Image (cartoon, rainbow, N blue to C red; front, side):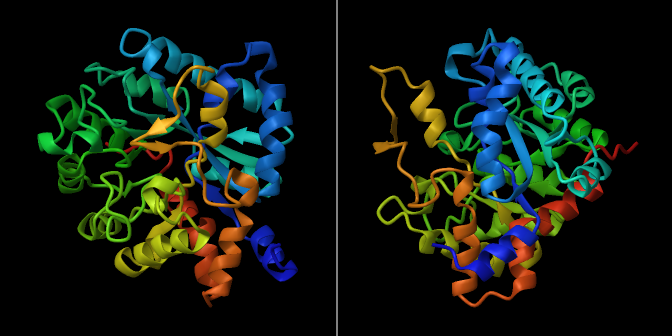
Length: 347
């Protein structure tokens, strides 16, 4: 049970979640039902968790790669628009920092579209302009595997940096005001991005390698590199990246504290990556929910979905964190970047 004073702090703070795969479940519904499904299934969870800004990643299942990637990506982008247009009193799809602020002022949840994997682009980098017109404001080049732009972290042994198309994409995204996201990117690819970047680089859902040695987590040098660009690291809640042996709220807070101590308090946020419900609904009855030998439905107790977010605030309060720093982690750091960068074109 979260104490009343902690609940009040959480409710008053601006809470930004930079990774929830709920759009995968929305897109599985018939188009005419998508807005209502979001309103009945997800809006109550987001409200219960105090979420004010929700990044919606567009992730493509293996079934659609590579041939159907563009088609499915467009379906999911359209689903996000349907959600926003069918729930105008509750949410708004935001393209700029001004849009985010307007949504918050109006008591609505600000939705931000992101591409996770970019299989839809292939080597046709100019398609990022199309996606930017459709409202995409964040992009990660890979998932665990390989795309035409870069390698994912599961391919670290290849030692690959960005491809020439990836280098071109990075420059174009910076000009378009679309945030470059290094979550899932290989170690060498992340270093390459940090070498080339001229605008803030973010990690939407990555934790600390020093706390849990997993290829999806970021080393201290990469945490510092992201901070040097002015970016933010959204700490991932997935139990396998936090501590598969002891997935507790305390271990999650250890990651948050480590990122804050290494990158600075201005450069840490929340990137929960709630996937339990996604796995449960999308895995066929005879399928597997195995993730590197672990049950992918496992969660940190109390953090099965966004409604549990107040327990993160409670743990930081319990550890003696000052209120201004808690507010930064919950959302103010992400808001700073969104206000300065979203849709701000250059050149």
